[in-house]
Amino acid sequence: MEKKYVIIGHGIAGCVLALTFYRRGIPFKIIGSTRPGEASMASSGLINPVTGRRYVKAWMIDELIEKALDFYSWTEVLLGNTYFFPVDIIRFLSNHDAIDAWKKRHEDPLYASYISNKRFEYLDDLQKPYGIVTGGYRLDTQAWLKAVRIFLASKGFLESGFEPISDRVVGNDTIIFATGAVGKSLSNGLIPNKGEAIIVRIPGWKLPGVIKDKVYFIPLKENNLFWVGSYYQPWPEHANLTEEGKEKLLEAISEVYPGEVELIEHLTGIRPTVDDRRPLIGPSPEHVGKYLFNGMGTKGTSLAPYWADELIDHITIGKSLPYIVNPSRYPATTGLINR
Ligand SMILES: Cc1cc2nc3c(=O)[nH]c(=O)nc-3n(C[C@H](O)[C@H](O)[C@H](O)COP(=O)(O)OP(=O)(O)OC[C@H]3O[C@@H](n4cnc5c(N)ncnc54)[C@H](O)[C@@H]3O)c2cc1C
Image (cartoon, rainbow, N blue to C red; front, side):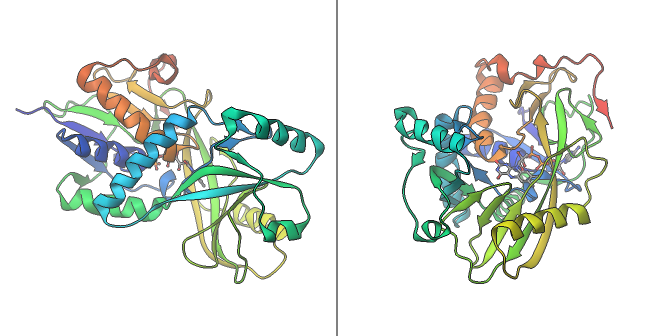
């Protein structure tokens, strides 16, 4: 019987992995059930190459962006629509330290493709110092994921259903868990981290890019709509939307935009974060012979395409994976964590 790879979980991690198997002509199946707290459906899909107060390049960002661009562009041809867009990210430089740190990066040739002093009239009018991060991208994750699921189901690759995370052997198949952090059973090292976001309509507000302030303000494809989010809540008690989360985000908007705002949608998701901020890619310490494709944290959009190819190379031709992503760095001392 032909050996098949079975992916459990159909968030961005599972779907990117599935399409990578498909692209490489390797037989696979994906099983997914939609559960409360699915992170991918709340994500703004941003790839932000330079982050933090010191404007440091994100881990492996040059390689990750190259792979993401190639992968999502290929899926756009496959799915017959556009989902992946270049974006500029506006950073307000609110004190001397920020201005100095920005200047330093601007002079650094390693940051040449990401740090720009380009000007926008709208921002100049605000009379607040700012810098522009270039070379970022945004995946319209919800629309992309819906289209991918329809594509995979129409070809008979995607089965809808909940597959318990267990040692149960499924025939001759190799199992890969891409289950994020929504379930009760979590791999060692995973820290569920809840975020809430809102989609609002702000008529007449035209931003030249994404604003990264206390929260992100992301202009969406549809005119006047913005994704605004999100805060971090490790080990949340539940995956539900909260009034408090919504109010906090509306308040953050009022600090930047004083006019009328119409609430369109309230979203929440549980991110699969890891305390060393590296994903969990490779053999599962808990389930011998099975694999993990998890721990994408706050960066599923950029991490998934690169690490999908690396995991497939590891499983099919034995290419080694760096220890820094190997799940065995969090040994299975107590087995799965049950919440
Ligand atoms: C508010 C918010 C904003 C974010 N913004 C960004 C951003 O701008 N850029 C970025 O890169 N990342 C962002 N993220 C992070 C990003 O969403 C995650 O990195 C990514 O979604 C993780 O994908 P995943 O597939 O591992 O997990 P999930 O999306 O949670 O998917 C896991 C899937 O597996 C299914 N599943 C679980 N267990 C089983 C089972 N036993 N059987 C069958 N199915 C199962 C679940 O129902 C779900 O469909 C954001 C997250 C949040 C919450």
